[in-house]
Length: 314
Image (tube, rainbow, N blue to C red):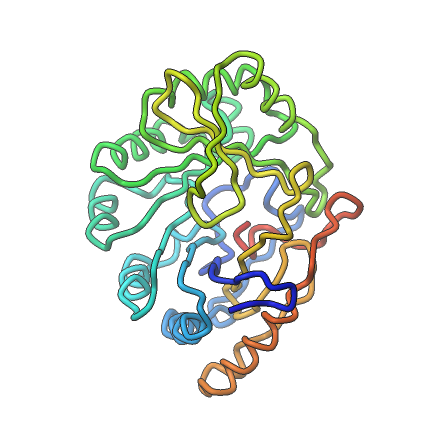
């Protein structure tokens, strides 16, 4: 469907849990309180919302958390979502810790269209400092297994205050020979996060050190823009909410695990869909009217957002 600014809204990010087995420094709030199980939507309720979303033209879905793999039954949910009439694409964002080979094989059988691994450094001690667990080797082994069985893999790297050129160089060395997408994400000022301009340093590094070519075709559903680097199998992507503001082409809405429809990551307001789930006609009406009123743009460049990342999945 189209919103009032004539943008086509065809992509929904679904947070199925606020819980996570990591405690990343830029994501979790200082004082942590998980939702109770009774507060979050049942999978059947999420699927009911997705059915209506498809009727509105939203056919691409990203499943997130928290960490989605910690919620029991998520694989069955992914299979049901993938099999819904009209669904075009289902992808998963994860820290990768729980994706053992058996699970990866099941994801392939489900027909998952892509898996995004969140990995901010390849230095084990720093990895543990960022996320609270020294589990980098397990995550990398799971990622490499996914590549080996032909899954579409992307690596999301948040360019935060601890990120250095050494991190960048080690990432390039490790992933350059793999058919993956290596994406660098500008840290957004959520909660206590401060604005960083390190994403520009990363881009300048590629420009000065490599022979690069802009990729004009769209890769994936999100706002990343990509380059090819001569001699590398991997493609390089950048997601810059501040320095490359993409609100004019934003195609997404977000569904929280509690049933809140969030129209923009910056804006704290949301629409509670839970009261309408048992009335498909009313649910469609509320979703249509709400999405039509999606805000024109964020204001991350000027203000801090009160959005809590672990509750909305990025």
